[in-house]
Image (cartoon, rainbow, N blue to C red; front, side, top):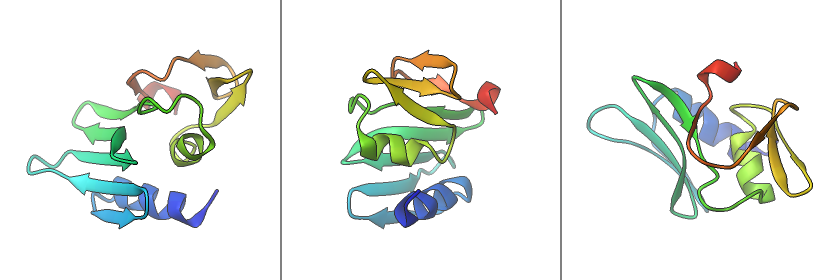
Length: 99
């Protein structure tokens, strides 16, 4: 886990803006929080929970690093595995039931 992962995660969870290099956390007027990596949304939070996506960066180390703050993500044969059990296709997924 890198410092930028921690800072972005804490900003996301505390609904605060954050920007550092390739990672940005924004809060929109409705209070929804969004995390971006290289301009592509990889996490969002609203009233219906926290959702993650690979942002079309299928199984890159940086994407995995940012998202690992939310759930345990490993890579096996080029695929994301959530919590060492569930093969994940990278599409928007509500992580509330994983925690």
